[in-house]
Image (cartoon, rainbow, N blue to C red; front, side, top):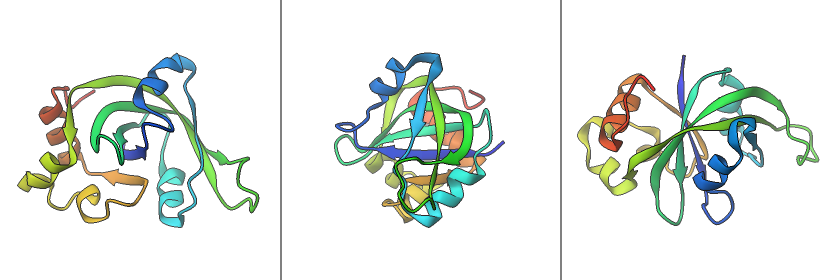
Length: 141
């Protein structure tokens, strides 16, 4: 199974909002970048995803799980983009801030460091394990 990272501005949709959605979860829509779209399309049921607060906070704050794979995004008038559904799995006991990630040599190649503007990103197994340890979560979550 692959691992991923998605970004959200907490003023628009925070991890607390995701937790409040409960086990029913919610859709993740509004992606309008073709690279991010390809990553959404690659997500599979049950895969885990870091939830990153962008702009305010700039930290990985939790983990969500894919509960519905890629399907059309009804808010896209062009019909070119889609979305997935997530449910919250765990809060990060210690949020992992972007500056801490950038300072960690083991994360120097992470997409979040190299292309921080991309809203949906792959995360390697090694990066996943390291960020989980940094945040106080078991890597096998």
